[in-house]
View (cartoon, rainbow, N blue to C red):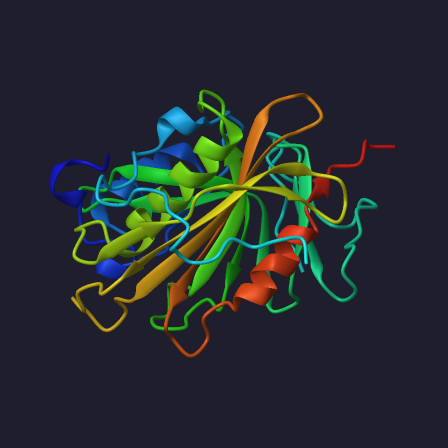
Length: 275
């Protein structure tokens, strides 16, 4: 489960300060002086389900949580191979949307045109001591600066899930872990997680999907909010477990609608082989 006491007040439970770091050294300095949301140059290392905190013990998976989805511009790529731009032949499968490409996870999905795609970057959340508690790579963010100049209402990306008991277990665990890390590290609200369900995207990726919410989060500052997260865990073409994550503020004007989340997840597909 999360650290005793829930860590610090990051995400919706406190400050969500964005830090852009182009070197590992700068990342260390940044982590020492701020808490909250962090965007870092992807280091190319594989992460696993074992790297993340366990979900709150008070949040068993159940069918009563937020319903699971069903089938119904870019940055400079990182030379380490964490992602690549959309100018190398990878096109969106949803007309007018943008591809989010991960060469590390060998996966692609699309996001709406108003999302900011950051190929080759990793993002995640820090505790109040500046320690990273969760992260994902080849990311896209939604409505940067919606509350403060340096935060966003949501984000999405992919991460490793090696070491998970199963695809279903990874999907459930990650959903709860992300709402805890992003919105309520102090565990002031009520966590609820949905039991994972089988899922097949419109482009042949099969795995398990889950979702989680945290509601009743203490309003510790103007940006504190309830939150939700959706996940999909599957095996890529190298048989590695991968988890796609999308988190969003909940109960706010510009919350990412569930039907948009379903549409994003429906676009998940294997990364085409380079020509």
